[in-house]
Length: 250
Image 1 (tube, helix red, strand yellow):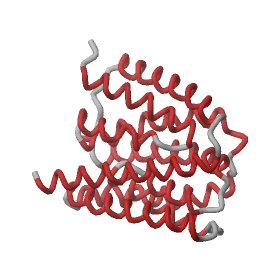
Image 2 (cartoon, rainbow, N blue to C red):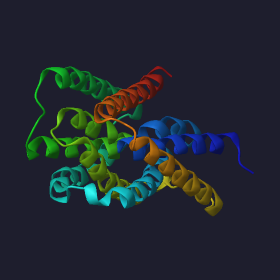
Image 3 (spheres, rainbow, N blue to C red):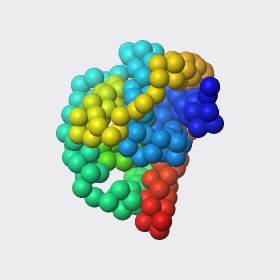
Image 4 (cartoon, rainbow, N blue to C red):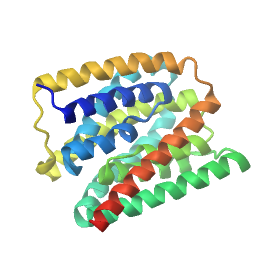
C-alpha cells in the first residue's frame, strides 16, 4: 500500500521529470525538498540522484543529436573532480551550516546572473564552463543539487539554450550515477530501502513526465526557457537556505 509520503514523492517526480525535459534541468530542484522531508537528508541525495539519472537518460534518448560533446567535456570533467570533495565536505561540516552557506551563495549567484543577463554580453570560452562544472560537482556531492550552478551559467553563457539543455542530460546522468556510487562507498547510511515495485512505479512516473515535458519544450521560446531556469535556480537556493536555517535554529 502506498503511503502519503511515497505519494508526494511520485507527485514531485512527475513535475521534476517534466521540467527536466522541457528546460534541460529541474528534477532535483523540484524533488529534493520533498525527498528530504520524507526520507531524511542523506537518503534523499541518493534517491534524487538515482531518479534524476533515469530522467536524464530518457531525455537524452530524445535530444542526442543536439549535444555538443566536445564542449561538454569542459563541464563534465571538473564536475566529476568536485563530487568527492563535496561528499567529504558534507561529512566534515555541520549539515545545517553547510546548507545555509551554500543556499546563500546560490541566491547571490542567481541575483548577479539576473542582473548581468540584462547588462552584459554572454560569457564565452571554456574556462567559465570548467569553473561551473567544478562548482556543480561540489554542490552535487554536498547538498545534492548541481542544477543552480549550471542554471546560472545557462543564463550568462554563450551556449545556445537547446544545445545546452541537451548537453545537460549526459552531464546529469554521469554526475548522478557517480554521486550514487561514491555516496554508497563513503557513507552506507545513505542507502535506500525501497522495494522493486516502488522503483517500478517511480520509473513509470518519470516516463510520463518526460513525455509531457517534450510537448512543453516544443512550444517554449528560448527567452522564456532561460528565465524559467533562473527561477528554478532561485527556488533551489531558497530551499537549501531554508533547510539550513531551520537546522541552525532547531
